[in-house]
Length: 337
Ligand code: ADE
Ligand code: ZN
Image 1: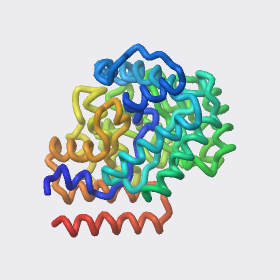
Image 2: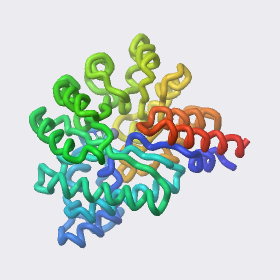
Image 3: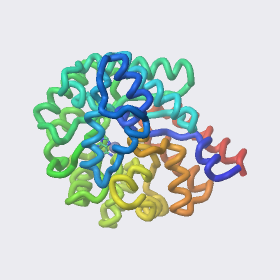
Image 4: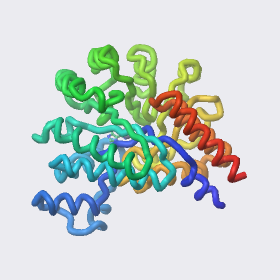
C-alpha cells in the first residue's frame, strides 16, 4: 500500500473545514440553475480559472460572491451532505464544521434557513454513512463586534445544534481583542471556543498570544506562526491546545505549505492536526492534505497515525466516542504494518 492510500484510509477527524468552502463548481452550477441565478462563468474550467489567489484577502474576494447560489434550506443541506459524503470516502469519522451565518444573513438569507439546512445534511449523513458531525459557528471578523453579538444571540436559540464558536475572515486590522466580549459571552453561554490565527499576518504572533492568554480558546485554527516564540509553544503544549493546520491551503494563501513549522510543532509534542480548510477552492480534501504533508515533511505512517490520534484527542466529543475512534486508529495502523 502506498503512503497516499494509507493517508486516505486512516480514520481521522476533520476540525478545520468551512462548509461554504466545499462548494464545488458542479454544485454551484446546479444551485444557480435551481434558484434562477445567472453566473458569470459557463464551465467548471472557467470557474477554476478564477481561483488565482496570492493571499487570504484575494481568496476571500472570490469566496464570498460564490455564496449567492445558496438560498434555501435544501441548498445548505445538499452542500453539507455532499461534503460529508466526500469526507467519509477519505477516512473522516467525525467532523466539526465551520459555518459563516453572517455571509448569508448579510445578503438577506435567514439564520434559521442556514442552520436548519446544515443540520439536516448532518443528520442524514450520520444515518446513511455513519459519520458524526457538529457545527461551529464563526463570526466574520471584518464585520462589527455588535453584529457578532447579535449573531451569538441567534446561535443561543439553536444551542443544541452548535458546539462552539470561531472567528474567521480577514485578520488584517481585525485582531482577536475586537471580539473579546463576544467570546466571553459565548463561553458563559456554554460554547467551546476556537479562533483563526491565519498564516503570516501582520502581528500574527501578538494575535496568537492574545488568543492563548486573554481569550483562552480551547483550540487554534492554523496558528503555526507560534514557532516564532518558543515560550508560547511551551504554553500551548502545557494547555493541550490543538492546532488545526491546513497544508494545501497554506500553499495557496502564502508561497509555502509551512511543512517545516507543522512538523516542528508535531515533533515537540504539540497537538497538531491536519485539515482541508476550503477544499473546493484549494483542490484538496483531507486525505490529500495528509498525503501532501507526508511528502513535503518526510512523515512516516506512524507520524500520520499520531496526527490522526491528535485529531480525536482534541475533538469536542464524548470520552466514550473518543476511545472508540482512537481504537479505530490503532487497529488501522496495526493492520497496515
Ligand atoms: N474563511 C474561509 N476560509 C478562511 C481562512 N482560511 N481564513 C480565514 N477565513 C476564512
Ligand atoms: Zn479556515
